[in-house]
Length: 221
Ligand code: GTP
Ligand code: MG
Image 1 (cartoon, rainbow, N blue to C red):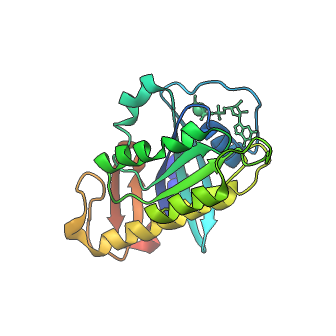
Image 2: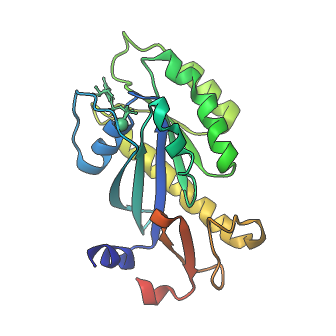
């Protein structure tokens, strides 16, 4: 009931997925963003964890459903079912762990297998200790430019750039969804279902991977 009330007040409901190697700080980023907390301990995420937050972006109320995935290898099979209905992906590496950065192309390939067009941002987390930083900003920027994916260097620990990263993926997700609405013939049917005309509000049940458009905005806000 409360969830339905939330949804009714929102202009957009967006499903965001957080991916990356184990221990890069995915859960820490999500907790910092949704609960403003940080823990020094590493408790492996098992399968998928869900968090939500409602934010205003450019005057629009957005409900973000954030899927925090497990980075451990044995859960990759679960993550492969994730992409349905996803509006944006946050791909995280650890600025203090080169292998997590080297693994980013594999994550991007994995995403492309399922949803080539989904908006993405690249997040270099743990950017709070210059002495132990091994992935330079320069290299990361070069890579992000090559890929055409915006880069954010963050610290979940110090709450640096976390808000900005989530805000950017939200903006990109909204922009992409609106563009898709204007090109219904290119829409993956399992992701967005056009009800009527393309100028309405996105009403989504992202948990179930479906998004519907309602053309009468006043009714739902
Ligand atoms: P999996 O669930 O196993 O995939 O790991 P995860 O990516 O969710 O990592 P998690 O958020 O659990 O963090 C792993 C470890 O890194 C924890 O000990 C955190 O305290 C630490 N950590 C996370 N973010 C930061 C950060 O911004 N700076 C520093 N210094 N440590 C961080
Ligand atoms: Mg985790």
